Length: 268
Image (cartoon, rainbow, N blue to C red; front, side, top):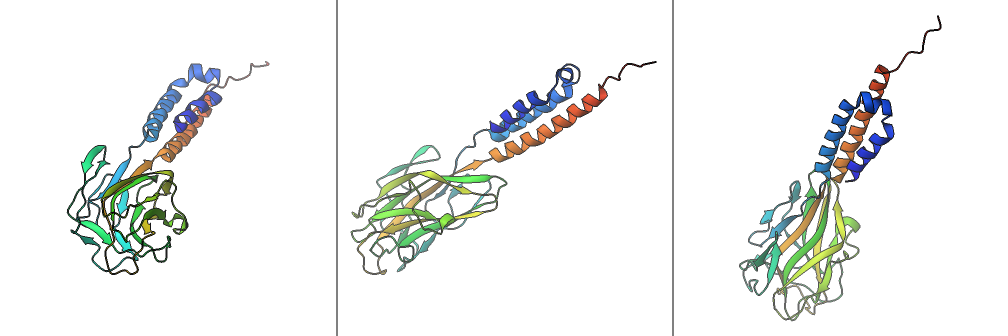
């Protein structure tokens, strides 16, 4: 919308009456083409979703064009394989690509997690790397996952990213984890969307903290049905289209002005 307004406003500033009357045809054609292209480029982009049902560490589905997604990783939580079928997920539903979806069951990702306050140096986390391979910016606007925490598992979670070296919690990305061994689904609508520039990567981690386990030998935390909502932002393309169209329009105006310049009357 911004690019469309830029082009429309600019034509009013640079179009004299004579040009409007005599040579407006080519200019109008350029203007209409610019508006059409800019309108398409700046129209709202539909959010896409990257989803894991944990059957493999790779994403189960990815509907975000131009987004490359790494495998799910685990940090600072050992003791066993990252995926397993013990205590399969169940008892919740979640919205996936606009449809109500039951817990996937089967495999889940599992971790041991020591107790204490959140520490990026010792708290367990699940993480993934998102790489923007497109020509426009993208924003991460939401993240959801099912979680099961045992009586000695983490009592809280926090989403952190590489944007600030995992130093602070992402606004809208924290919550409590009941230590009842029950599966619960958490939907996090991030109040400060996370931007990924063209060609850049973003590491996203879900930290678990506040448990009472004394070591990393036993599984105390499981997650399943992880999804990350991403929105492409092609508005910058629309602004570029508007700027190029404006330059073409100015060029057309100057040509028309030279062609229609009236010579002064002869003094002879």
